Figure 1 (cartoon, rainbow, N blue to C red):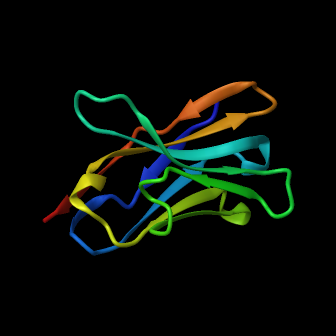
Figure 2: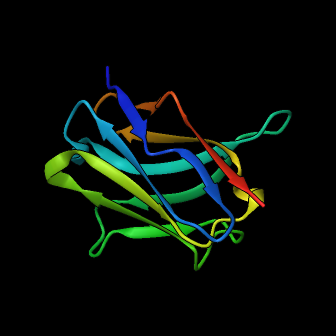
Length: 120
């Protein structure tokens, strides 16, 4: 079993920045892919950014709506994946979740989520 803990959410004005962190209870070398998703009430959870390991360099992918504003990265020594969010817009308001696919457990794990609120 893997626990993922997200921190870094909060309230920010439009145009501002936040950095989310997702720390795993095990080494992130276990994970093929780690990602950030977000969800607003009444809507499905949507992909924000993913980071796939095993390639050199790691492969990243972003939703069109966040390209050029958000950056996903990892720190293997800290078992942590980050989501740097710049140029935040009210439309980015959501609960942000990280996930990780464990290649050994063959399980997809989710964190508990962290709220991001962007005021106009």
